[in-house]
Image (cartoon, rainbow, N blue to C red; front, side):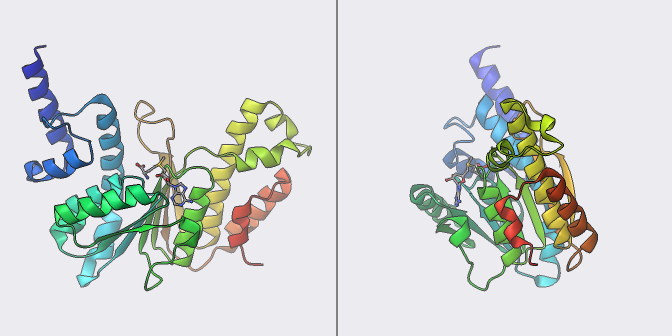
Length: 279
Ligand SMILES: C[S@@+](CC[C@H](N)C(=O)[O-])C[C@H]1O[C@@H](n2cnc3c(N)ncnc32)[C@H](O)[C@@H]1O
């Protein structure tokens, strides 16, 4: 295929992916995020990122639309935000056109926060804010975040995102966990009846990551959330592929709490996240 034909095909493809009536308006934002090249093209890496973020945007759209009902001003917190792809795209596609609601990006790296602030200002996204701070030490003004997202927040940063969501009384939480080492470390010294499940280091890492996400789901259920765990996007897009989507529907759930306690007893490990379970 000639370069000009390829460029035309790529342009056509990103516009097909982009769920907006006027995709051309989003070109400067997508270029600033390096999702599109200066010539308006998509390369393989940026296609992966765009596919992931758009998939999550579509999954979150119904919950965001519910939050936006009746003139409300929902607060969306994206924690461990990195370059804030998700926040910018949710704002561009949903909150911006609606004219209501705000996005707060929480990110430990000052430099990323500075560049996100500059991009929000140049895009005219005046209901986006960025806080340079560890998730664990961040409390939003007003103490509320209606939706909390954490996309590939490394290791226990996903647990910090869960604590953040609980203390801000989030109605919807979306987590795509990243690498996880804490439980594998705890299992190493654990010689209970199930030890064959984690005897070999590679299996301990995988089993530890799996147990971590099972515990995260049960902790959220015990706090009254309905939890769905699904594949995030195809494995060709990312290896970190588990999406934990939680929606609050009651104050607490004693049965889930019982199941969590039973699992912890059987495994003999107590990850730090259990600190959110009040006695
Ligand atoms: C793998 S990147 C993912 C970024 C973004 N969510 C995305 O999917 O493109 C993880 C980001 O989380 C940030 N991070 C990790 N631990 C954090 C913490 N405890 N508090 C705040 N930010 C954190 C890192 O600096 C990094 O930018």
